Picture 1 (cartoon, protein in one colour):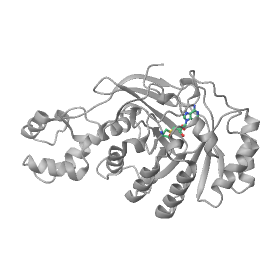
Picture 2 (picture 1 turned 90 degrees about the vertical axis):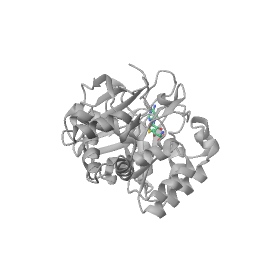
Picture 3 (picture 1 turned 135 degrees about the horizontal axis):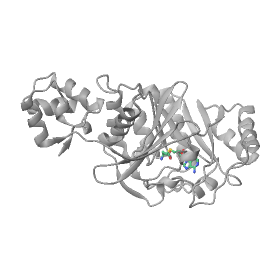
Picture 4 (picture 1 turned 180 degrees about the horizontal axis):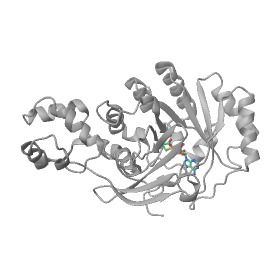
Amino acid sequence: MIDLKDFEFDELAEFLKELGEPKFRAKQIFSWLHKGVESFDEMTNLSKNTREKLSKQCVVSTLKIREKYVSKIDKTTKYLFELPDGNCIESVVMYYKHGISICISSQVGCRMGCGFCASTIGGLYRSLTPGEILNQVIFAGKDIGERISNIVMMGIGEPLDNFDNVVKFLHNVNHPDGINIGYRHISLSTCGVVPKIYELAEKNLPITLSVSLHAPNNEIRSSIMPINKKYPIEELIKACRDYIKATGRRISFEYSLISGVNDSAENADELTGLLKGMLAHVNLIPVNKIEERDYHKGDKKEIRAFCERLCAKGINATVRRELGSDIQASCGQLRKKLL
Ligand code: SAH
């Protein structure tokens, strides 16, 4: 069966044309799908005949909420969604002053193997389809009953390891007849799949690219992020500089501070040297605890000192505020199972 949400708008129009439907149908159906209807029968401006024709070969895909956890501290809401094949993924809704943001997953599991991240334990099961990525935005939005205005692709999985589906999703979620979220309100985070950073630059989407750096040199980075052995830090930074040149967009570097691993004054200075003169921002994340690993965050004073040392040398850096800590909804804590 075809999930119509896997089509981009033009593909949907072409598909409907082949079914003998008039041109205006694409807009009607696209907009129903993205509003979150759960069956063709809810598409009330289609004739019965059209609805029957569609249901013979297509489905309106949905996500089932298996579990929902709401933070008592800040209302952050974590969903465990069940996919049609029984696999589960997590998405997190966060409430900010500037609007509501959702952190979504791009794969079931992850094969990147970062040492401090829970999402990669157990490896990769499969990549999500464009429809499954989009459904997280649709069904979380439907559940909270409010408009989601920002998206961060920072949940489970490596988005650039599922490149084509992620790009389709981005086109669809931005489409004016769908949810219509501006590219400038979307961030995509990668652990550093260098060739795909170049491909992304070619797509010319004004989204924010976040790069998980986490170390100022190859020795430390390779010890915590296996991807660094394939694409060492010099190649990654060159790709980032080229990305900035090609797109004119600032890159956001994520740096999880792990006590005794990458958080010394020397590490801060080396990081400064690496990023000097770049149109970039450094997002410092005190490492979050995951039960399988023995990484710890430093105390607040050490984290502030690291941040101030960067800022003093002209690097634009901030410490990321932690949300949803009581429901394991923070960076690196998402996984495909129940709490
Ligand atoms: N695969 C992509 C998307 C995941 S984004 C990527 O690597 O960028 C999630 C962010 O949280 C990444 O920057 C990731 O490195 C970071 N992260 C993972 N585990 C973490 C942990 N235990 N504490 C803090 N940040 C963590």
